[in-house]
Length: 110
Image 1 (cartoon, helix red, strand yellow):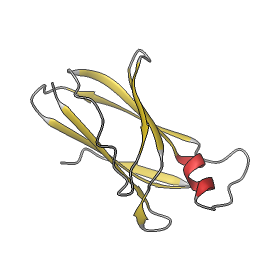
Image 2: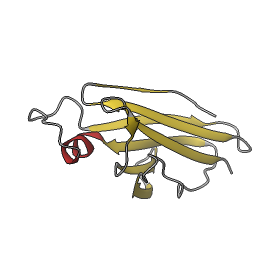
Image 3: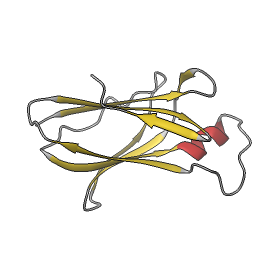
Image 4: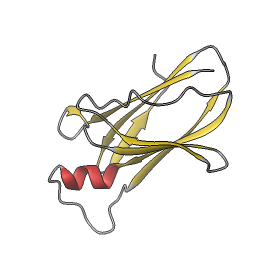
């Protein structure tokens, strides 16, 4: 089983994004985990995963509203989803999210 981690960074304010709701699901939509990021923008309770396809979903708009950012209705980014694959059952997979109200970036980290 592969270990999985994530780290959400708020690029608008230049800080970790604490309190971002997130979920982890299989490609078929079976929810494996729901939670939120801690004060460091991390979610250490994510489960180990078998090889396969998965989706992380982050509540970006709710986070920015709670941070006092005025967003249009509907917001440009609401729920940011990242579809990714686990190929190596022995590897660690890190999926960071750098996010603002109008853009995001991700990559496979270490």
